[in-house]
Amino acid sequence: MTPSNDLHELIHSLTKMEKRYFKLYVSRSPGAKQPLALKVFDAIAKQRKYDEKALLKAFKDESFASNFPAYKNHIYNSVLRALAHSRESATETDSIALQLRQVKILLENNLHKQAYKLNQRLRNRATEAEDFGSIMESIELDRKMLVARSGEYLFDAPPEEMIERLSAKSQLVLEQWQRVVEVQKIQMMLFDAHLNFNRRFSSWREAETWAEALMSHEFFTGTPNLLSFEEFVTYHYTKFLYEVQFRGNTAAGLKHTLSIVQEYEMHPKRILLSGAGYLRACSWVIIAAIWLYDFEVALKYNTIMRRAPEKYYLTRTAEVNRFDLQSYAFEGSILTGLFKDELSETYIPKALEAIEKWRVLKRPHEEESILIACIQLYYELQCYDECISLCSRYLNTQEYLKGENQVRIYLALAHFALGHRDILSSIARCSVRYIQQFPLLEHDRLFYLCMNRIAEADSELKIRKHIQTFLDQFSTHNDGLPDPVKNNAVTSVHYIWAAAYLKGISYREESLLQYELAGQSAKQDTQVP
Image (tube, rainbow, N blue to C red):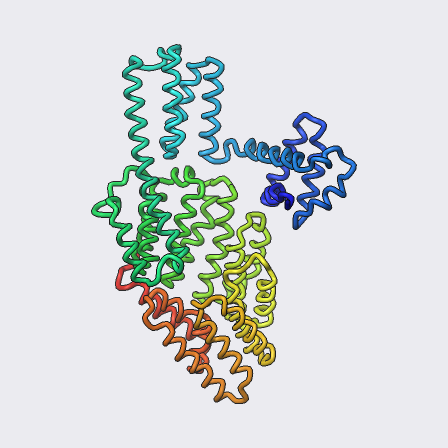
């Protein structure tokens, strides 16, 4: 059986502050095991890849070596206890949970009056935060006080009337909670269908028909009657997914995301109560704006999202920090469309630094997006050697997979720009073999075949003929696809490069033209706010 690396993963997920807190927590805890636990903790923290044999060798003389799994479990639980202790009031949800435990302790000690007072304050906070689970638990604690009878004098009505009041309150809360859950179920079905599109549907029309049937639910027909803020957010995010992913109406999707952000900003306290909810809503606006090729709007909200934690005094949880990392991924996508050299030049070192800073978050998707953006910006800035270096770094990182084909394209184009014909041919042949795993990327396979022909061509005329053949086949391949998919195709790097080369203009000029045309198509005559 392979030794468990759960403790290794947990330790490497901790921030420097959390590691420091754990060590202080353990050092203040009684028991002879604790100093040794810190040594094992540090030894595991130094391992980039978990190696239990090395640990057992290092601690072979210790008594726990004969039952190391149990000792690791002891350290694992100690880390979790330390984290729970450090976060007791880190967020509103954590603080409410702490108060719930305090009410229970007071009840266990027969301090009903104190428990009742604290429980009412707790319920008010939970109601404001729309923490439905905590509200229901608070109501149940009031019921327990009534059943105990010693707490009757705390209430302003007879027990039977109080029971009715509490039951009516719980039914109202349960209705709101159930409505949110119902909308969330539809939201997750749409999201799952989007992620597994090719496995779920044989055509775009089939997907659209399926989504239309799903959205015929009473929540989405007629004027919405939204009973809570949580339901408001879930409703508009579901509409965003439907409009963008299944109807291709990105402009309508943007309106839904903007309504969420504006609702948060009208009630600033909700931003603090939501933790990362406001940041998430801003990220949806940015995504929709990028898909509309409205990079100025995307940049505006990316700046808002990055500054929000300090502006609204958000606790720096791992989720909040994730959006800081994501803001660099978004900024890279935005700058590749804005073509502002001075912004791009300052962005690249900051973005690469952000990858190292937030590596503890274990977010390879965001890291990957940032690295690809830096690669593209180096290419746009004509820094081809730096572009090639980053491409190699990407391809040699096992955690990165989703953008490998895009990186291979930049690698081929950078070598072409430097006149490396032999290397270009090798890249093209390897990439053709790689792309065979993905039949849906036929136009990328055509590009690599084109680059291989270019590497073998002995004249400019032959090169231009190969490129023209690639463009013709590319256009034929994309005929019949929905407009949103076509937009992505004609703004792909190899299409822009090929079109620019044949026209005798710069990559930048052709990019601006294609982005403008794609943006007009994406708006679909719907006014964007």
